[in-house]
Image 1: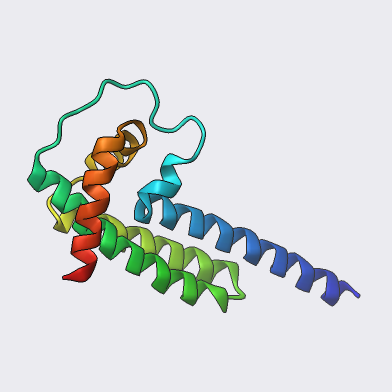
Image 2: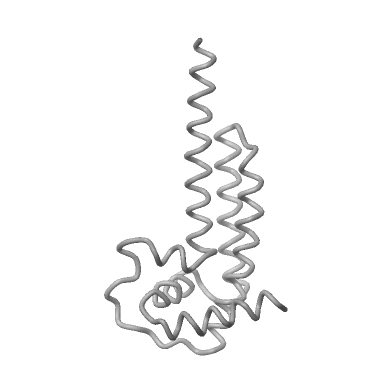
Length: 136
């Protein structure tokens, strides 16, 4: 019976870790999802971003979505908490590196994502860029 309780605890922990990991991945990878979260991106004065910066954001977003899919699939079969944490750290490092390789820092990436929530025009522009980046 103790083994059964431990198995249930492990499964519950695994589900929580997978959920947390997916949330973290989606926060960077899917601007629309992050922006739907209450309390995010409110109140700050709008920034103006150069087209080149927005294109870098779009390119990074496409790559981050692929990273998210990759790590979500890898996390599904994980049973051990340590392995799940290790995968989460790897995903986080890979996502930060991807954003930086596109010439952005995480703060700028998040600022654009947050501003998209408040600016339908910016959101439309960036979503078009993301679609073009996916097709290239």
